Structures are given as C-alpha cells and as structure tokens.
Length: 162
Length: 358
Image 1 (spheres, rainbow over the protein chains, first blue to last red):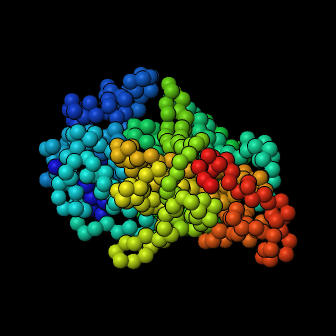
Image 2 (tube, each protein chain N blue to C red):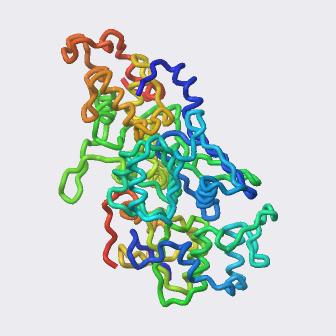
Image 3 (cartoon, chains in turn yellow, blue):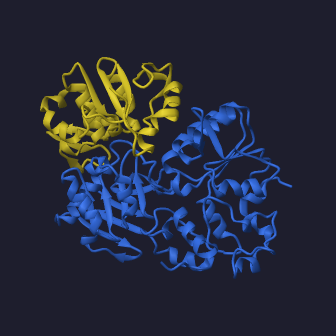
C-alpha cells in the first residue's frame, strides 16, 4: 500500500543516490521491470553493464548515472523490506505511476515535500495526516491544497508524529 | 545601486543583465539563461537536472572533456566565482563559504545538506549571490518569481532551460464583481480606494476564532472559499515576483473554478510597487534581471525605489495613488515631483483600464 506523509523524518531513505550505491546488486538489472523503469524514466537500455541512451546510442553512462527517481524506484522494487519510508520528493511526476504499481504489493510511505501528481484513475493511497484512505485523487489534491503545501511553504514546518 | 530612469534605457541595458551558463562534455551541451537572484530548476526524473551539477563540478575541477563559460552581465566569470554545493561536503563549509562570497553563482543540488539547515531561508536572503536550485519544490519562504522557475528541455545533445510556469498576461478584465488580493497591504487598499463600486476582499480572515492578515501562501484557499460562498466574476491579484511556490496550487483551484463555471480573471503583475513605478509619472520599468543579486525580488527592489522617491510604506496606500483624492493640499512632503506631474487619471493604467468601473 502507498501512504502519503507530509514532511521528512529521520527514518526515511533520503540520500537515495548513496543508499542505492550501498544496496545495489547487479542481478537487479536482469529484472524486466527494472529494465522497463530505466527505459521509461531515463530513456535508456542496459547493455554490457552500461546504460545506453535510446535517443543517441553513442551516449553511454554507468548505472550511477541513472536519475535519482529511477534509483529510488529500483530500490523500492528490488529491496527486501516489510515497510519502507522514502523521500517522495526525489520522484518526479513521471515516477508516480510506478510508485502506485510497486505499492500494490509493497508497503511504501512517501515522505513528501512537494505536490507529486499521480494518474487520477489509478490513484490509491493512505493519508497519514487524515489517518484514512484517500477517497480518490481529488481528495488527495484537497489535502495538498489545505495542508500538504505547508511542508515546502513554511520554513518552521514540523512533520506530524509518525 | 544606480536606478535607471526611463523605459528605453532599461531595455537597452537589459540585454546584458542576465546569467548565461554554457557547459559541454562529450555527451551533452547545456545552454542556460537565468535572470535575477533566485532560480529553480524543477522537472521530471531523468531530466538531467542533477547531471547539470555534476558537469559544473567537472568543469570547476578541470576535467579535460568538460568545457564551459559562465557569464554575468555579459562578462565572463572566473572559476573562483562559481560554486557547486552537492551532498558531499559538510554543512559548515557551505555556510562559511556563503558568508564570504559576493556576486558569485551558486548551484545547489537538491540533496545538499544546506537545505536542512535551520535558518536556510535567512542565509539565502542575506546572501548577495546568484542561486540556481536544482529541486522538486520551490520554497514558500523565498520570494521566487514565477518566471524564475525552469524545466530542462533536451533536443538531441543540446539542453536548454525553459520556463516551467507562464504568466497569465490577461489583456481584458471587463465585468468584475469581486477583487481578491493576496495580502492586506497597500495593494489591496489601492483597489478599495480606486474601485469603490467593486467589492474587495476583507483585510483579514477568520481562522480558529482569530483574525489573520492575508498572505500569499493561502491565496488559493481564499479563492476556493470565496467560490464556495458563491462569489463569481472574480479578479485574483498577486505579485508574480514572489508567487512561484504557490503557483501550481492556484492552477489546481482555477481548474476547480472552471468546472464550476466560475468567471475568474488573474492580474499577475510583478508587484503592486512595480505597477506604481511603471505609471507615467515615474515611467520606470523593472523586471527580474534588474534585481541583480542585491534584491531578492522585483517587489523588494521596487519597494526600495518607491521609498527613495516618495517615502513609500508597504502597509498603507499613499494618498497620491487614490484617484478620488486631490494632492493639492497635501503637506506630507516639502517638495514633491509627484504633485507637479501626477495626473490622477493615469493611476489606472494598462490592463486595469479594461475593468468596467464608474
């Protein structure tokens, strides 16, 4: 299940690039879903241990050059955990459909400090602020407008108790 | 700072008042242009935002395949005046650096620890340097211009920055029945005094049994409440020079207004003070590129300029700009160029003339 929490706590996976480097296993890049993620988000394919840009195949880069969003998604997909808290503001809007998909089978709490947009029809998530499931995507947007934006608007914002 | 008088002079000088960044390696070429002190690069994952910081660092470290040029006001910047704050150095070293540099360009990666520093906003506001934040959010406690938020766009190997948000730039307002301003200060009073036949929002809002002054962070919620209370034909007014953080929220509410068939117009001037300075009596036009790194926003620049000219105070509207009052008997200033030159009819200028008023 996907949960939305406003603000950042000490427990969350925040430095995603560095966490990814620590967790990475090369076998991850044999998984079709991982290859699909990097194709979608970073517009690249994985060949001979390098990432190759789809638009210009002469552009190659190591796994470390993948975007933070891709790395975060791969970690959420491939790591073993009962539940995980991760800095949601590392993800762009193009990652949100993947977050919903991965969260169908994993317990993920996104600690958000920005207005992350989701595909409305697929959106299903739990509100840690309201302590209930969001009725629909409109319900989530209302929470962003009324409360969520405090997490990036006000310097003295304190996250709620977990 | 020397203030520029006259519209034409400002335009000719504007050509050089910008920050230009050109960085190139084997893979990509970044050609970026920024105006003003506070700039944000947002966007989807995989958009090469963090890679920009990496390439800039490579340039500073003298990697052979990386070439670059940074220009400020048309002059090439030496490398000592370019800094990249990533997530590798400790926090203290960043804060010490910021306190000791001036008129430099600082690129701050989204994972830099300085974001978590208490008083981060004050550090940035007090710093006289140019900032490019690589981020997913625009901080509400920094006065960021709507036009200073960018996405990176890729065309082959070329990457440029494009405006993420656009100004409404409406040209016609027509029949307005309610004016909603972002705050309770002189800007609101301007509409109260000069459009007395149109209802203007109250100067305060009631929340939790207490009176609160209005502020721009809640403008989207004020609009939502007003349309739920049945208001229509609304003119929403905000200073685009400091509204970037809340702009996406207002867009969501405007979408709701459209679904409810509400007529909403938007006046997104740079700031009320910028409007006053652009009036024929002053004829001074300022944009983000005029702020350099000395003013955090166009609003603050214009406020400072008006203080020089007419001892302006943001909290109250000078009688000068109430078209219902004559300045003839005003004793506020021993000498006042404004009194000699001001035509009260000119107070309503530009697109405000398209409001139907008596």
